Image (cartoon, rainbow, N blue to C red; front, side):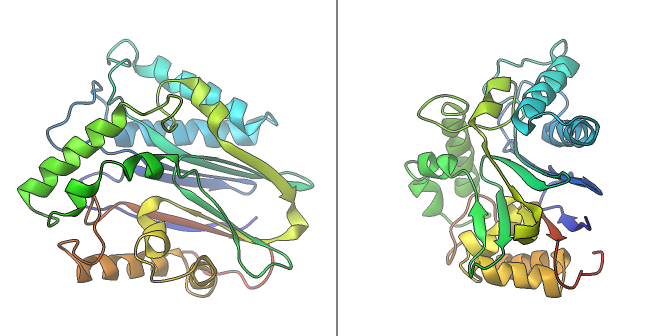
Length: 280
C-alpha cells in the first residue's frame, strides 16, 4: 500500500492535525482547537492530544488484528491515563479530535470515521466516490453559527462570536442528541462509522481533515471526484494549495463564512490501482 500525504499548519504555532502511515495502515486526526480566551483544563494542549492518540492508534493497528473501534476505545483510555493526574479530564474543553483509521488486511480494506473528517473511497464501477463523514457536529452547529457567520473574519467581534460558538458546542460533545469525538470517553468509539470492502473493489482512498475538505464541502470549488483527481494527478500538497488560494481570496469570510479563516489542512492519498503519485 503506497501512501502520500501533506499537512500544513493554519494560523496557530502548532499543527493540531496528525497523519501517519505504515505499509498497511493510515491514521488521520484533526484536533479541535481551543479559541483564545477559552480554557481546556489541560496543560498539554490539542496538538499533544491528537499526535499522542494518533501514534498510539497507528501502533495498535499494525500490532493487533483487533476491531478498529475497540482499538480506538483502548487508545482513548491510554491517552487519558497519561494526563489524568495533571489535567482536568472532566473539563468540557478537554482536548479532542476527529479520527480516521484505514487498514488493509489480506482480503479487505477496513475503515473507521469518527466526527467530521472525510474518508473518500473510489469504488470500482462507480462514477462518484463514496464520501464517509459524520456530520452530527455540523447539524448541531448550524443552529448556533448565524451570529459568527454574519461577522467579518479577523475582527475581534468575530473572534468573540467564534469563542462563544465553540463553547456552546462543548455542551453537545459526546452525548446523545449531540455529536461524538475522541476525547476522554472511550464509549465515543462505539459511535464511529465503520465498514469494510474487498480491497480489489477500491481504486483509491483519501483521508481529509476538514481544513482540506473545505475545498469541496464549504467552498464548493470542486466535487469529491475532482478532489480525487487532484490528489491522483498532482498530489496532496496541490489540493491544500488550492484551499489556501481560496482562503486568501476571501480573508473576511464574505463569500464563505467560517469559524477559522485559515485552518490546519491535511490530506492523505492511497492509490490501489492506476498511476501512483509522487511523495509530497
